[in-house]
Image 1 (cartoon, rainbow, N blue to C red):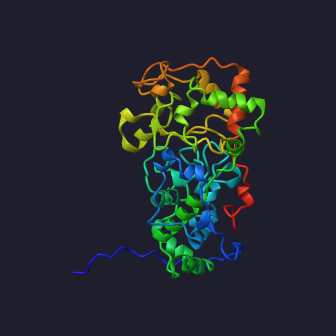
Image 2 (cartoon, rainbow, N blue to C red):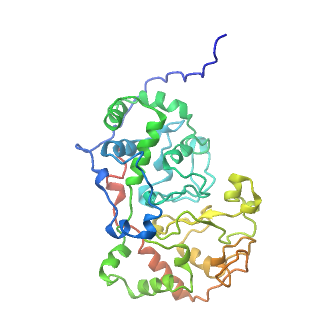
Image 3 (cartoon, one colour):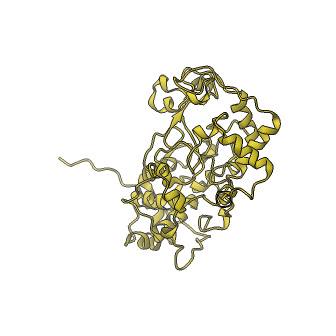
Length: 364
């Protein structure tokens, strides 16, 4: 009896490459990029720092990951790259409510910003993935995003002349595998950090660099009454790994997206979404999982007096502010000037680095 064999993808015709990546020699020292001492020594941050011992960042590995991230040849039609939905000028998010994929398809949710992934152990809006090495392949394979058969990736990239040398530098030989693609992408993304905002500068100067309006917004954010910092705490401005119902809809599933329940099929998990970082928030509009809010002022207005009732509304957003979940929504009596002050403070969280022209920008 002849054993069944998995079909091997047919070789693709040679790819004509008009643009080669422009890379520094020697490679940029991605492996030496570290977070500030305040982050590294913070007990709360250390609880959620990712252990990357099985895939440490190397200069050559992250360089390869950078090229892969910006290369549309990882998509079925060779027109969509990872960066198509995660643009450096938008804080590695997208400027659209939902992004366009191959063959005119659109993504289900707003593209999440790729921010400080070294401190994020739960990935996707519904936190269904815990390892970046696995997560990076999901959009590549998704039919509405990049639509690529993962088994065909090595065949595709073997036809691109510059990849053999890049894989050899990163892994010791020219063999191209889907696993190596995932490892390189994860190295590049973990090297990406955003810790150079005006807020970070203010931490060093007692916020002497803030305007009166920004100081008022900072006070409102941290005063406990608005409860902003209860959900967006730590130096990364989010509660790591937590999912919650934030009262956008009375019934999330009926509104078009049930959050975690879309993945698990459990209606009791309707509306559970990850709390996201506010880092670079001024660059990542529109907001929420479906991109429904175009501006930060709309977001502030929603949390001030627009939260909807829900059986599992998180207790932080209830009228009492303490458990259990599912209580009537809170309302904050903020006037227009206070709301604008909160927006002004949130804008100080945007990184001042020019990522477009940095070693994290496109090499093409």
